[in-house]
Length: 357
Ligand SMILES: O=C(O)C(=O)C[C@]1(C(=O)O)C=C[C@@H](O)C=C1
Image (cartoon, rainbow, N blue to C red):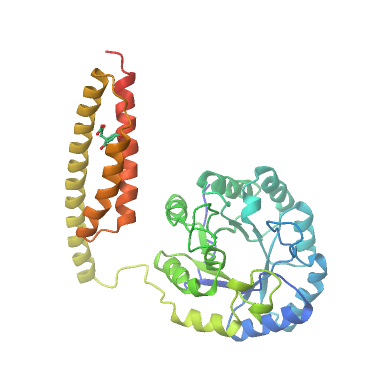
């Protein structure tokens, strides 16, 4: 994909609006509040894919006349909605919806994505924003973007809304920031928007996620906002009133993309040189450790001893995080490094065992 930059406002793109359109009154009041905050792109769920049956699944196409009314009251605003089928696309286009997004549960299914892509083939100028799939699979996310690129969509964007997890987590969907970072490094011109609402699942985490997205040079935020969140028919815990949204946005610091001056650049480069040297030392130490692992591997093979040594491994995984803490290193970080190192030890020793000589 040769993605071109199509959104260069210089400022982060803020898309906000209710999780779901519920009633005409609720939509118009929420939009009024957001427009007062200076928001010009409104999000609104018309159809809602829900995890369990009998949850509120969106009001459907009766929302379109209400959306039209909001647009006639505020002619400069744009509306973005989620589409999950060719029929949704057809109705959205017929009703002058300006921006479409593909939800996380749709991105996982290439048949579904292709159906939507075919429905927008040849449609000029419509932005399509693709949410990450619910599972942490970058190839699937890129694949969905490629399907839209292949039908001629030029205004493409990606929305990072976090990933489902079975682990216990403070997040509703764990962010796994390394995945969108990898996407952005492969496609630097791709518009990347963060969805703090779905990552957080609750209001009190929204700010720190949104700020982190800005620190990582995301191009915008899509945030759920409702006139009275506690009464919302879906996602009530994570929505903000337009006033609260305005306040939160006012605290967010927008970072400079470029360095302010030459002195700063020189100083930064000095520190980066030191980081380079430290990384070399780190890799030398790692290489020494793995040489020792090879030695143990050869020795164990000669004596026909199993590769995985539970007792030894338990000791390592217990005390390395404690050693790390004494050096000001986060225990979870040290633990995960040792899990990776141990995987590599086992891979190396398996190679030795499989080598017949
Ligand atoms: O101590 C061993 O037996 C090793 O092979 C080394 C090592 C390690 O990486 O530290 C690797 C595999 C075992 O499960 C335990 C520890």
